Image (cartoon, rainbow, N blue to C red; front, side, top):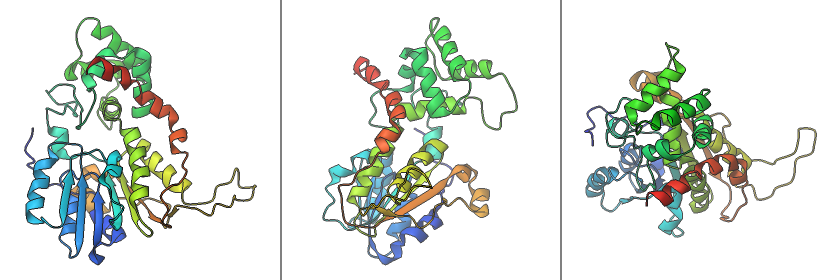
Amino acid sequence: MVTDTIKHYPVLLNELISIITPQHGGTFIDCTFGQGGYSKKILNLKKTKIIALDRDIESIKKAEKISQKYPEKFSFKNKKFSNIDDLKLKDENIRAVIFDLGYSYTQIKDPTKGLSFTSEGDLNMQMGLNDFSAKETINYLSAVELEKIFKFFGEEKEAKKIANQIINVRKKKEIDTQTLVELIEKVKRRKNFKTHSATKIFQALRIFVNKEISQLIQGLVAASKVLKKDGILAVVTFHSLEDKIVKYFFKSLSENKSISRYVPRIDQPNILFKMLEKKPKTPSVKELKENTPSRSAKLRYVIKKENFYNFETDIFKKFEHLLEIENFGNKLWKNFQ
């Protein structure tokens, strides 16, 4: 565990507040409580209530402090946000559901989590409520499986070479964090990267270990069901893959679809969302100066049009190839339980 010694900046906070307008009161679900930045801002306003979720057990301590300050206004569950349905919220008038898909400085620097390629801790990457670790992934999956994880979850161009090198190295010894970083650097060789040469591989492993693709898709669907008419679903993403999923989900349920621009639009009376802005909100120049890691953040939101809870979505089919890659973890789960 690491102590949070620097100021935590909730990304796109002002933009989010302007969208969900908590100053009018209501109940809000913070699906990624983390450091509590969004929750604390909302709770400072009158007639507001927060239901917070986070899979990271370390967030419980921060949640307890907020609960002591706002005992009647705040509740917390150590749950994955894909399990919103378990909260039984049908009687709650949920004004907005909020997702911030980023990781805090505290989490990244915590050696026990093993999220950073500069970490001396185990190759872990488990954010909580996991079935297996990155260490098990690297040391037991096949070259073909590792290549797909790196290619599709990390968008790594050297995925095949790195996967093959992992297989060669692990014949001699178990791969840890520093061994993995060294072999990635050896494969990529080129210098002067804008980002560290291991960044994409570590991103891919984190997504795989935490099943971030299925968690996000299931979370979006579940959140859409708990919202009532005029409720807002807002998501902050930090990399192109998760933004692509959010964008598709919002767009596919916000407008009539047709096969091409030359074919008349299909009449769909049960459109779930209203999308007021097609382009995402991004950090201001001021925020970028104060909080450099916010540079990749994008905020998208939609407003629920009607009070219906059973709707059809093809998002699972659309991203089926990514969900199939996630399923490589099933054999790790069986071996390490």
